[in-house]
Amino acid sequence: MILWQLFTSFFKIGLFTIGGGYAMLALIQEEIVHYGWMTPHEFVDIVGIAEMTPGPIAVNAATFIGYRVAGLAGALLATSAVVLPSLISVLIVSRFWARYKSSQGVQAVFAGIRPVVAGLVGAAAVLVGRASLQVLAPGSIHIPTLAMALVVFLGLLYRKWDPIKVLVVCALVGLFIFK
Image (tube, rainbow, N blue to C red):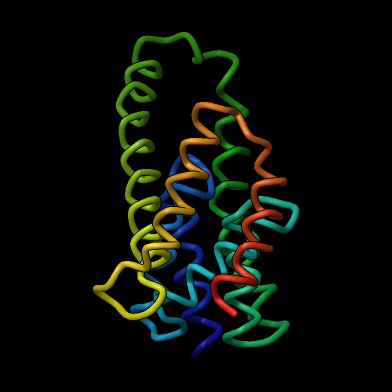
């Protein structure tokens, strides 16, 4: 039963999210919290781990969540389920893309999809940000965490900091703040 739930949840995530891993985060969080597989705080930890490991964030998250819920079989099933809709879509679209990519209808579809992707990524940022800032207890904001998030956001946005170096430095700072 749990393997079927993993498969259907991650297949749905792969099927109904467009725009890559960050766009999937809101739906992934909704599914794992709905089934009680993880809390929102644990989900943020998984996002952090998935972000630091090589590969797409949604695939990494599916692998970690599947493994946590049902071991190796769960990891393989969740990972396969999240990529299967994209694989099927790419196989179908690749047959017709060259012929129809400049058609007005296809351009209109993509014009409609772009704002949805932006909304999905924005929702994921808010969900992860909210859970990340509530370190001590839900409803309370941990000021050092908020300060660190703002400094990193501004540094990445305006100073073009290297994200890998930011992750390493913040992990080291976290050792002192959260020890």
